[in-house]
Figure 1 (cartoon, rainbow, N blue to C red):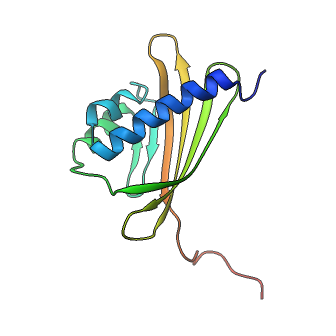
Figure 2 (figure 1 turned 90 degrees about the horizontal axis):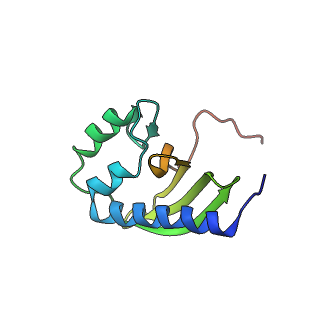
Length: 134
């Protein structure tokens, strides 16, 4: 299996960039079309846990705008010709909060590249569940 084929990385990056532009413009049609239209699609957000494309679409319909963000780092890895993971580290404008976003994308025969799983989170300043050695 070929890892990090430059053509596949470029294709995944194009999907990633289109999604980021849609987030900035709250383009719900593009955001919805980026996901696999299937009940097995999963999206975990900062405030939501969504199983299935219907839940994802219902959530998107409630969003008036997304918090503006500045990209700090993008990391993409591909495995073979039809599987890629994108990782985004960003900073929310005006708050300094650091966010992370992971998308697992698959090239599907009838749909092209689609997100099949996504996870968005904000970095906590302190994890109360972790005990530090001292």
